[in-house]
Image (cartoon, rainbow, N blue to C red; front, top):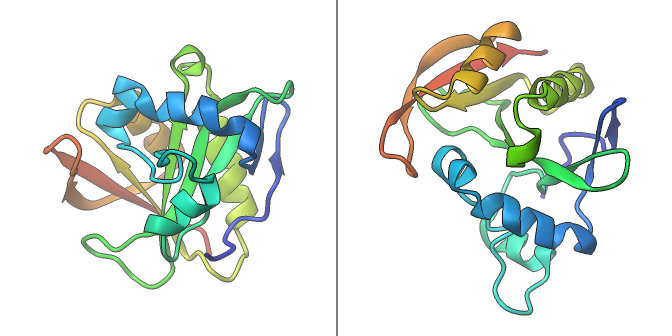
Length: 176
């Protein structure tokens, strides 16, 4: 496991922080959501075997990856999850990491995803590990497309989405 993003990342409406055992049920429900599964897939960190700890589940399938982080409201309730992983798709270069944000259905459309991504990009700038942030956007997923455009990501290609079978747009933003 590698350290890419110093946690916590704090903002007025949320904190991106390490996952605790108390978060697991909320994150299991998040990754069971049909829209999250369609666009993001599932995370082995939250697809646990009976009796398996989140850490053991995470170690099962992640190398060169930041352990997924919880996006929490000021009250502590989980709004979503964020992960960064080494990008190895078409056009990958050293220092490319893909950012993924998944939000609960009831908080989508409230700019939380945009604010989280902006805060995380600010926290990553100047760090040694991440040169370029990659975002994959499924066709027709207008909120994500709007977000990458608003943050000045540049489209660098397309890549098959293993969950939907469609071609995702691949966007990049140089941060260092």
